Length: 457
Image (cartoon, rainbow, N blue to C red; front, side, top):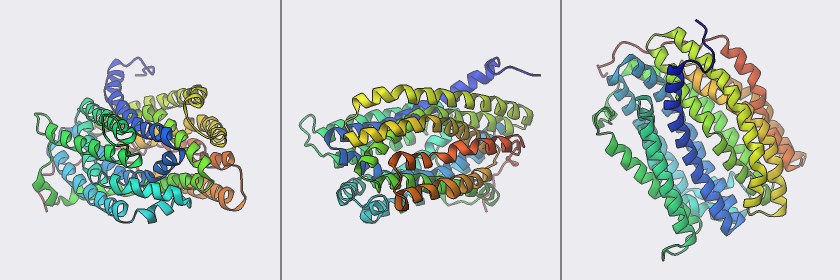
C-alpha cells in the first residue's frame, strides 16, 4: 500500500502532536540565547561576545548530557510503544544518576576553575574576565540542568510533549524577563550586567526543575523513584550503554568540534567573535523546526519499532526523510530572508557587521545539510538504535576535513574570517550523500525491547 507524503492523517496528526511542542520548546530555549546576546549587546559588544564564548562550556555539557538523555528517549520510546512502564521508570532512575554526576563535574569546573576554561576559547584578557564573572554564577545552574533534562525526556516519550513545551516556555519567559531586570537594573534593582544574565539563568533553571518534579506526581506521569537511583538492572544497563556510548562519541566529536569553531572565531578578534555570536543565535533559532522533527519523528518511529510494527516504522522513516529535505530548503530561505532585517537591529562595529553578512549567506546553504542530517541521523537512525554511524561520519567529515582546514586558515595561513567560517560549515553539507546511502541499508529498522524487566541485580 503506497500512500503519498501528506495523505496519511494519522501520521500527520501524530507527527504534529509530537513535533510542534518540541519545536516550540527548542525555539524558546534559543530565545534565551538571543535575549542574552541582544540585551548584553545593547550594553557592550565585548560583554555579548564574552558570554557567547562562556556558554560554550554549557554547550559541551549539554552534548554529554544529550547522549544519556537520547539513549533514555530511544529505549523509552520503544518501551512505551510496547506498553512497558516499569522499564521506563528504571530508565528514568538510571538517566538521573548518570546525568547528575556529569552536572556536578561541570559545576566544579565553572565555579572553581573558570579562567582555565575561558582560555580555551579566547586569548583576549577582557573577554576572559567577563566570562569568569558569568561562569562563577551560571555554573550553579549547571547542577540542575542534567536532572531537569531527564524529566523532560521522559515526559516527551510518555505522550506529555505539551507539558514539556509549557514548562520550558515558561522558564524561558521568566529567564528573559529576569534578564531585562538584572541586566538593565529595572524596578529599582541595580544594574548587574553579565552577572545579572547569569543570575536570571540560575533562577529560571531552578523553577524549571521544581515544576518538573511537582508535575511528575500527577496521574499518568512517570515520577522519579529515589530508591531506583541505587538499584541496578544489568541487562537494561547493557542496552542503555550500547545506545549511549556511540551517542557519547558522536556528541563529544560534534560538541568539541563545534566549540572549536567558536574558538577559531574568538582567536580571529573581537569583531569575528561578536559576529559569530549573533550568527549562532540565528542558526539555533532556525534549527528549532528540524530539531523538533528529529525528536518528535524519532519518537513516532521508535513507538512503531518497539511495538513490533517494523514495516510501518520503515514507512514513517521514508516520509520523514522527504520532509527533512523540504524543511532544509525552507530553512535556507528563512536564513536569506532574515539577513537584511538582522542588519538593521544588531548593534555592531562596521567590521563585525561585514563578517556577519558573509556568515549568514554561508549558513543559508549550510542549513540544508544541517536539517537533513539532524532529522535522519538524530531522529530516524537513533529511533532504531543505529547510533554508530553518526560517530563515524563525524570523524571523517568534521575531524578529517572541516577542523583541519579551519585550523590552517586561523593559525597558519591567515585566511579571511569568512573563508574560515565556510570551512567550519563543510561537514554538514558534505555528509548528505553518505547519510542517504546508509539510510537505504535500513539497519535502523530494529526492535530494541526485551521482555519486561522487574528484577534488580
